Length: 396
Image (cartoon, rainbow, N blue to C red; front, side, top):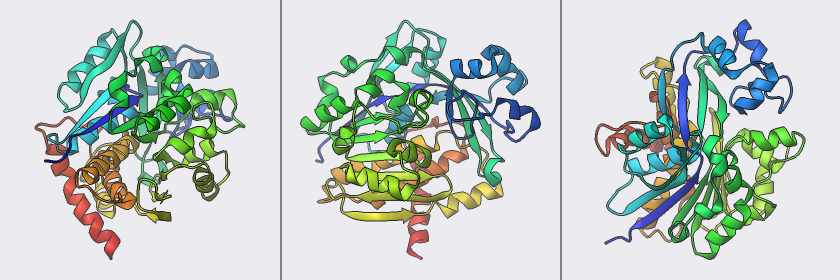
């Protein structure tokens, strides 16, 4: 029997309130857009803190929010966050007999916290380490414009950190560091974890864990020093203790402090990062591996799924792009777990990327990052055909 693989993830989890069909190009919306980096205004594809947006406009968020949404109710209320969504998706598409996925994070003792709990009960994710604090549950207003970027769609995120301010490294128990894989997801929205990431990664590696880091837009450091590269922990030593780093284009540029993706990839390689995957929206995914965890792979590109794109163009599915990156990470994690279970001598970075690409792409078929399964295995059944189609696509 295959060894049971334990995956533990810590980081950003929150309540998403999703509003679709908000036109970012409308004249009435221009007043909310950022004028310069870190000023607290809204920017498509990026995140801003609620308090900073209020300062930018000089008005209460409740007033601004009502104007932006015309007072309408959200199209969906769902679990969100780069850590918890990736863990939920990985758990949903993996064989639960041979692996367990555990989440470590913070929520408030409020109605939003109860909504998260009720939704988690429908998933195979273990959440007994999801700590309740006497604070507001972290939340994000997600504004979605499906017509943005020539119909590819984009979102704007207005975030409230809430109880995530309280979550510290002391909450990570011995079981976390006894896991086969540890995932640090979107820690820029969990400040104490993010600022101590260098030490946490060192500890995880000293315990023999595989370490995965997936990032999120770091508005806190962008606001603090918009001209400097974003820190990941307290030093660049973090990178040499990361087996796999997953980012989008903007995050790669800001974390490396380099003007181009080519130079950013060189920075991560020189810094000792084991492997890197960078998503670039509808452009090719970029990746490399230095051979430590995955087979050596020089700077390489992989396309997005043409089968997913065709369905979206035809309007067969109506969803949004919220959670695409988070589900991408979940697909990568699930594929790595499968390769470990199959005792592969050297793991295949391009294979895990395929599962990331189809997982991220098919997220556009529904609203929000978390898919509520009617039965266990439903989500894997939904995305598996796209794996076959993608393999055909890249072999032609």
